[in-house]
Amino acid sequence: MIPYAVIEAESECLSEEAIRLRRDFHAHPELGFQEHRTAGIIARYCAGLGLEVKTGVARTGVTALLRGALPGRTVMLRADMDALPIQELTDADYRSTTPGVMHACGHDGHMAILLGTASLLAAHRHALRGNVLFVFQPAEENLGGARLMIEEGVLGNPAVDAAFGLHLISILPRGYIGTCRGPFMAAMDTFTIRVRGRSGHSAMPDGSVDAISLSARIIAGLGEGVRQGLPPGSRHLVNIGMVRGGSAPNIVADLVEMEGTVRCLDEQDHPKIPELMDGFLRKTAQACGGSCELIYEHGYPLTVNDPAMTEIVMAAGSLVVGADHVMDLPPSMASEDMSFYLQEVPGCFFFVGAGHPDAASNAPHHNPQFTIDEKALDVGLKMLASTAASFLNTG
Image 1: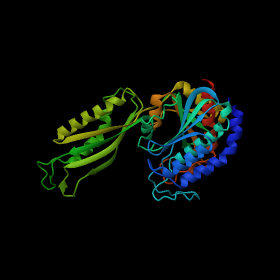
Image 2: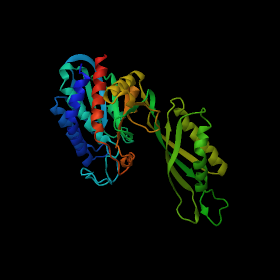
Image 3: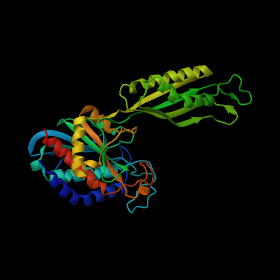
Image 4: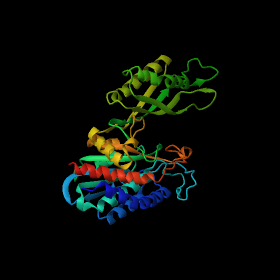
């Protein structure tokens, strides 16, 4: 067993290296399935620790296996690698050098934390009971890299017994940990609606069907139409975020396309939503003489934390930041592709506070001015190392 006192002491020695790695990743961001430079740095670093490294997993992913000296179970620790198509607007010395691409969600910090954790645990493999699989996953941002990694066998050979992952979050101050038992983050799907009418001259609209007016009815009523078909208190959102239609100001539009997302925190309600949407669209379109086509794509499933694994994380949090700084959070309507791993094996996904003491400095995620308090990297490193050691020791 690796005592927490050892983890605490050695993480402080590794924190400067974690910051250096994070800044390098931040200065050289790469989009999903394009993380070639990033993957190369990770692979070389893990090979230098004596880990069993595989590259090209799910195109650009990397896995690194640490075999402990003692027999036991296998725990997976995961970090996402991809950046976002955002032009950075911070004045940091290490700001993005790639035009239009930025680490605006903390993934640069996640990779640095996991590399630091690998370094710490590898130094104590003689005391390690079981194996630790470090997974550096590409394409978390709506591309489903986790699903592809699972399809390529990341959870087998050796079989993974539990999976843990973290997310740095700017809305929590540094020094806080947040998670919850059971459903933690929403399932998220995307959809396209094609609204068809009949074109005509705007001065003589008789006989035409205005697809824009029909779309306005859909936008105003779709959420309520879905809500009426679900039980009271159902936790879901239907949002239309893009609308395209019309060709000229004096022509009645015959086609409008809309795109949006569905989010849901209730497993029993989630499968009902596409049918409810389709029914509302057909009824509304027919009443106006038009038609609708719904193209519905299932995205990320619900992120569900196993209660026993969540207790391990919360216990680790009590050691790292103190029990009064471990928050039992309400479920979030945000989504995460860590959900795919947690469908297959028990585990827990949790938040690590990375907000600056000055709240005015804390831009939201996916914002061109997003930053983190880099001292949170030390907290994340301690959390992953403690969680992995605790899980393996209880096997």
